[in-house]
Image 1 (spheres, helix red, strand yellow):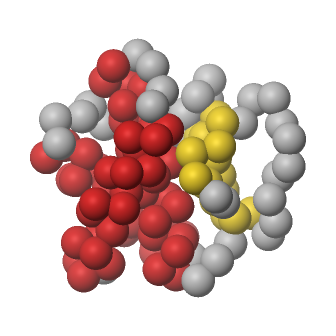
Image 2: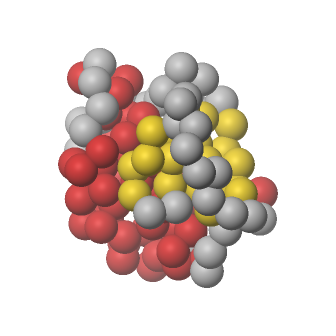
Length: 108
């Protein structure tokens, strides 16, 4: 799983750079067994994808590999937008993940 996550992050980084976004310094990517529920420090990006802006961490709920790609990408793009613009736009991050989804899958 670790190699898979690294590959997805590398592809998401390339897609974010192509869109003119800065690369965030992601500290941790955790794959959770279940939804973390309500936690004050987590921001929900999409269903099953969360970020912790203070620590630049990504949390995704375990799913099929293709859905995991979408969740990691959405969370990565949210952090990239935060790094670039200084604010979060989770709707735009989710939209960007949907737009780049098939390209990411093909390159895996």
